[in-house]
Length: 386
Image (cartoon, rainbow, N blue to C red; front, side, top):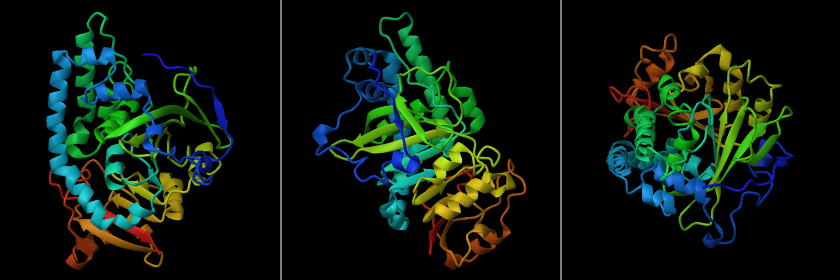
């Protein structure tokens, strides 16, 4: 399954223009659903690794193998449990509690999110663009050849590795970095791209196009066809996936950038800072972020979020509560605050803990989200700028 190489083009605008947010119609979909089409190569292989029956002849033959059928059946069971335990309650809660943010959000900014498109999509299903940031490399989609020796073993090994990569997320709601480093390798599951495509397919979307995105020194973006060879990818760089839901005429975008958000790499004169600063995002979402926004080495990304966001939804690993000044922000607390897990020291929030002791200030959280997977005692904070 080979794809033709499209011409390379330079986006002569800042990130905001690359998203089409300042240029009316740049990201608008064609006139009707029939004008939208999936990229058959990406969409079909994404189906295959998502346990969804394919139409492409070679993959259709491969999915008759017992190895794929076992994978697909096991995945359906796991996904059903995830829906029952987390996703269904999350969607209902988001509709009732963060509906204003959802309606206002065209661009969702998700720093430290890694490949977690799923949580972003379930909480903010109406966004036009999702911007995910993480340290992990982009990678490639797998290729399966029914005529190759050991095709069945290849399928079994890949799907087993994929489920291993997803295990922490399914069970705990977040990816553990050291486990991602062990499974998202070139000889197992090559990077975050397969994981994001998996989430896109499991949420009922079609993949229309995939492009690589490089950040130029002046903060402009270079977009080019995914298959166009490059000698080397140097962080920060990324990927853009265009997608749409069945029966809709709405084309949307998922961006992922492999980048370092510590102040030294994310200084105000650095290219990726210029990119992020030029992006008009209405809402920032942060969860399971290793409390990095508590530290003095992440001042720039913290200040940028507070300056540019209209809404912030986060768990207690996000921006400390004390930074949301009451004269600037309205806030609502959900769940229960307990001290950070033992992996993280010196990031307790006594002021937040005191507020959580007043039942009048706290609403229930009907799903688990965060590091306290053993007790499901999670805290979620929702802020709206005045």
